[in-house]
Amino acid sequence: MKFKYKEQNKEGKVVEGIAESSDTFSLAKEIRERGSTPLSIKEISNKKSNILSFDVDFFKKVSLSEKIMFTNNLSGMLSAGLSLTRALTVLQKQTKNKYFNEILTSLIDGVTRGGTLSVGMDKYPKVFSGVFVSMVHSGEESGNLPKTLSEIGITLKKTADLNRKIKGALIYPSIIVSAIFIIGVLMMIFVVPTLTKTFKDIGTELPTPTKVIIFISDMLSQHFLIFGLIIAFIISIGFFIARFKITQRYFDSFILKIPVLGALIMEMNTARTARTLSSLLSSGVDISKALIITEEVLQNVHYKELIHSSIDSIEKGVALSASFKENTHLYPIMVGEMIEVGEETGKISSMLLDIANFYETEVDNKTQNLSTIIEPVLMIFIGIAVGFFAIAMLKPMYSVMDTIK
Image 1: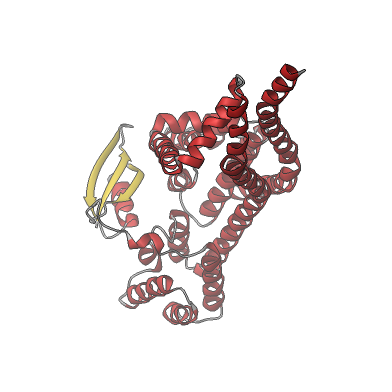
Image 2: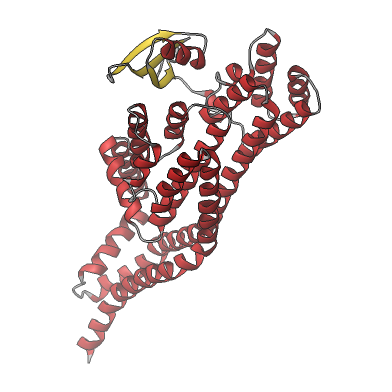
């Protein structure tokens, strides 16, 4: 397999290149043997991109709950004394997901041929993340794979719980906004045209808000297809612009400055960073590799850049806590202080776990109250929308009544 890699040599210079290797771990080992530090390693896909081709893998997926069940069951069977091949075979027979069944077949075949579980998993990055594969690899090297798999199961469950709580908090406002949008469209198509006809019969001069609503109503009722194409074009342009790095930077900065939501995102990223690092370090992954994987896990570009810069700092002998203490706008002050204590006592992994547990609890508490916080905002939004519509439609009527008087 071919990989594109980025390494930092003995002189501190970052070098990029392409190399062939059996897997990412072997290539990382080769880089370290020549005295350099691996910063990133990505497999180069041999698949040719074609606009007309259809990626059937888009519909192939393994849910988080299936992966949690897989790791917990595999850990249990290995702890009970079953061989890895037999345990995988049992799990393959139990799964109802055809795609996951294919993956397990491939893993069984690889292990039977003398390969390792981590190398087999590394072939499916969409199913097994870098954190997952690295922890399994460390578990294999330490000879404690069952315990490592159990820890992976706990990490995945924490992630699933966090995602579920966030989605649960957003269900209520999503339903309200969707209902308002549907009602608004129906009113524009069926109610406003009747009022428009009345205004034309009267022949009075219409105010600007009324003209705006009538224009939107005409577009929806008479030119629905054109209106839909315009909206689709605007959305497409938005997605296209969003792919640029500079756009992502501005958007991620804006999100962090939003009251309540910004603090929630900060705590979510803090919890995710701490738990990922804790899981990797406790599994025996070296700090540089752990930070590289953590960078891939995070979504916000500012957090990714901070973790990336901390890799360079660590290679120069700077403590990990320094990066967090210098960036309190991204990570709370407590994080850097606790990591520093962990470095001094040699218990950085357990300190990171405490940080993760604390901020996961904070996120849990805030998401439970999120609906209560959003409700007044929704009421204000609904009030403004209804008030604008009422004024726009009623003002011309009052003008006519005043003329009659």
